[in-house]
Amino acid sequence: MDIKSYLKVQAEFINEKLDDFIPKGVPKELFDAMEYSLKAGGKRLRPILVLESAKAAGKKSVDDILDIAIATEFIHTYSLIHDDLPAMDNDELRRGKPTCHIVFGEAMAILAGDGLQSYAFELISKNRAVSPEKLLRVINVLSHGTGIYGMVAGQAADILHEKEGSFNDIEFIHIHKTAKFIQSCCQIGAILANATQEQERALSDYGLYIGIAFQIQDDILDEIGDEVKLGKKVRKDREREKLTYPLVYGIEGSRAKAREYVEKAISSIEILENRKILEELARFIINREV
Image 1 (cartoon, rainbow, N blue to C red):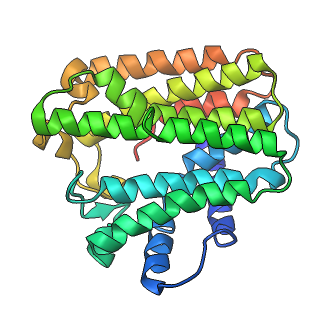
Image 2 (cartoon, rainbow, N blue to C red):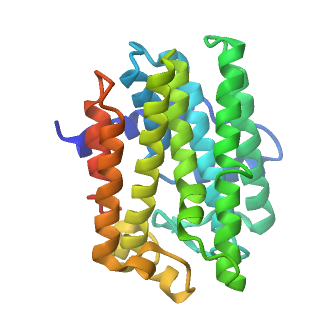
């Protein structure tokens, strides 16, 4: 199986379905900014992980949880909009296109991010195919992984290191900033598949490990990646003296750590019968060029 081609097909499927869930309303500029950012492209890794984790845990059809999977892309997009802002990473390009605040202004970009985050949870809560008890668990897991004990905490720690040099724990920063959200997506897939506790724990561990490997590869690509392929400026982390894996471990040391986490991820899901896609996805993460 060619995992790269498979992931491309899955991303195209998510892109086709996005229009069914993008909200419309007024002020038009707000909704335009949300839609612009959602349609800017991307790997759609997080919704794919929700769906593939559910399949790996034995769910035969994922049509009834597609809205929940896409909600994770809404949250991811909100985080990118805010991450690109001048007060954060001050990026002008994202996926080869002008960032949201460049096109719509800083205020509207902030509000577009806010809107995407809140609407993601509204979208999840409107699902009628999943029991209220399971939806509550999904919301809890997702908010924990992306909030003050997850992504938000990691972003705060990253800023504190960059601005003040007062936070120097690279593992904390990257586990919280990136890995916990990815972990949430895999755990949500398990919950929606009625997985056993053992299966859910396996997928949760898998998500954490590939999340760390994903961030390591991102750091490597910022150092040696192709700016045209990435669609954004490279070596910005070094210029801003951000705490990255290559800075701490070097390129080869970082690659070794990434491989180590991928092997941990693969080992963690040995109990799952339908694990092939997830195994190949884990390996692909550290071989990608974008």
